[in-house]
Amino acid sequence: MDTTTIVIILAAVVAVSIFLIVLSQMREKARIERARKITNQQDAYNRANRLLSEIPGQYLTSDLKLLLIKRMEEACVQLAGLKSDLPVKKWQEAAQQLKDQIQAKQDTRSPVKIDTPEKATYVKELLQNLFKMIEDMHKSSKLDAATAKKNLKFVLFLVHKTHADLHMFQARDYVRQNEIRKAIHAYHLASTEMGKSRDNPLAMKAVKSFRIRIKELEALIVEGKDTAHSGSQAKLDREWDTFLHDEEWKKKADYDE
Image (tube, rainbow, N blue to C red):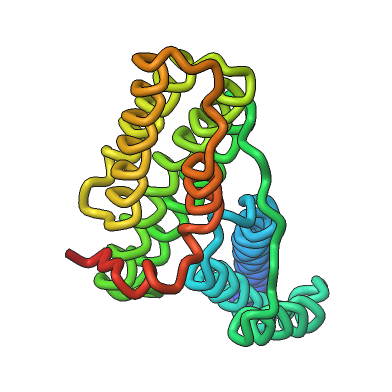
């Protein structure tokens, strides 16, 4: 075997070796990239599912529930395309079933009392995560600008309502204890929080109700009465507990303005 042949063979061996190394690296890179995409989509699904499960029922309107399910479904489609080993089909079936329940107005989630600063802070964090999720969906063209804007404004309103809920709970408690001045202060704080969403008709309705109740309580102090329990308080309590899901006020609300 002459020198030229040996050089050619060695060159071929080197070339084949380099090709195999490059191919192996490309496969490893593709495997890592696929694993990264699967992890990202799994995290997206879990985040949306967690928000849907942990945000208290009084904050989750049908639109927000459907938006969260939309994000879960999008993650499932991506995971199916990546052929992951996750139970994607089961997740898709559960999401579809829940969507049907929501559209049929059969999905009821229990409200949670916001009776401590810790609860208010935790719910606020959940809502802030929801806000970021909506922003990300818009940036990735999964939500149009108008829908994103509407929902972002509404979630921001809910963040303010979280603190108002805490002040409202405290005000009710003060009323039951006949600590009228403390109740008035709590209602003022709740009104201030709602006033941060001046472009939301529901917030302005709440502010008006708080102001009426404050005047009633102030009148009790002037009159020297020793009790603040009244039909007006019960009416305000009912309105506050249900006004996010009040169909009449939903029709009046225009979050795009």
